[in-house]
Amino acid sequence: MTTYIKNRKAHFNYEILETFEAGLVLCGHEVKAVRTGKGKFDGSYIIIRGGEAFLTGASIAPYQPLNTPKDYDPERVRKILLSKKELLRLENQTETARLTAIPLKLYNSGRKIKLEIALARGKKKYDKRETLKARDSKRDIERTLKNQ
Image 1 (cartoon, rainbow, N blue to C red):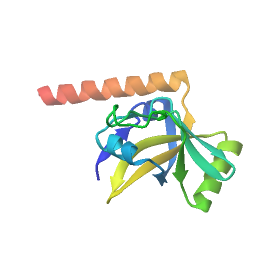
Image 2 (image 1 turned 90 degrees about the horizontal axis):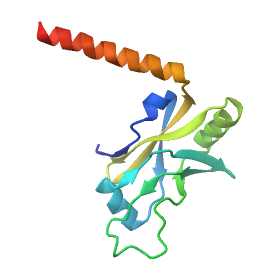
Image 3 (image 1 turned 60 degrees about the horizontal axis):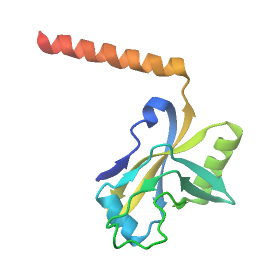
């Protein structure tokens, strides 16, 4: 399993509660671009409209800029493929529990490209500071143990 694109800030900005594996509808040249790592999840999230899920805010740069179609939009809204049960769960949790659905990573499973989605709750500023303090203290402990 190769990870192509990863949402690096997701674990810092959000408290991850539950994860799902989903398919993603991509064009042929987008698949090639993803396999070379030309994509970003910065500021992207998942919207559920009309019983379907869509990835918005994700950017996939063109694989070969001169050969891509002229009307290609790197930040277009992409459809996410989920089962009805998973869609209903995501929709209920995002509307009633005030959670956010965010993409975590894009990876391959066999020959297919999969998207890992998380139901998450946004962290407050003081939670982020606690995370930074814990990370710094862990780094200091490891450094002292290594030197001994």
